[in-house]
Picture 1: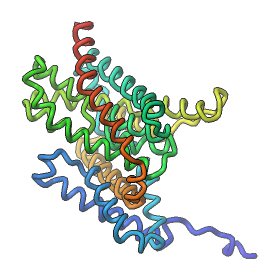
Picture 2: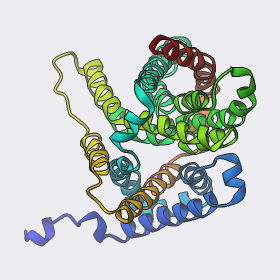
Picture 3: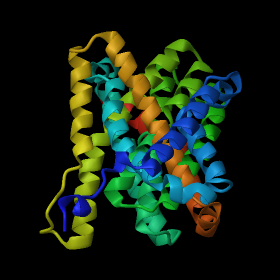
Length: 345
């Protein structure tokens, strides 16, 4: 038999790969355009959120009829492009931003991320009887950086597409609620604008929602909120490393070989490069734009692979877990902020 007969065609050499990538790219482009509109800004809807919504709509309408002709590209976007997008996310932050907000904000973020995720896993598996993957994904999205954290945790916990979509949906629902609720609560919190910014940045799900909640009070509050939020985002890499180790130990025992997610390490490297300002600002801006495109394509592809029937089958329990976590972030997060501020003040 000839070598040519045994050769396996490269993924990008197939029509299904190109058509699938083009489909994910088209949905991502539509989501990014919609995210620039006035109404999306008012609601704090990011391109990632809109991309998965468009993907779900397409996935439950016309996509099943063309799935066999686009599967390779859609799955490539959902998996490979996701990992590259997470790496490039590091160019959004710098190590210098950590120093700007002080040790108190760092301690607050660490406490919020740890407590929220542990609470999610314990309540999800023991009280709400959810599977461990769904509980961890909802916990990651609530604890760190919303949809991006859910997407980053997906390959580590090896979750199915509909579980990821359920987790992202909870981020959309309760992050949007937080965006409106926090400014209304501000007069009753007895916090300065800077302290309010730390509170919002350490407890609200998505970056866009943090910006909206901060600007509703002042530009100063928004600036502080974004820095603290970026500090939470930076915890994504060590979080993934710990999650990878814990997940493998849970499934294979304490002697299990640990595989470090390569994209988590490169995420830290990207943040370091950005911190050292080794790249021209215009290059960084282009990388951030590219990152938004890749993550939006990954979200669109995830939506395409998600069926509403599977989400409906998940039931009310994921939303109940997310609601409890939201209550903890609002009330418990406020308590953590006050306790740490007074303790280190």
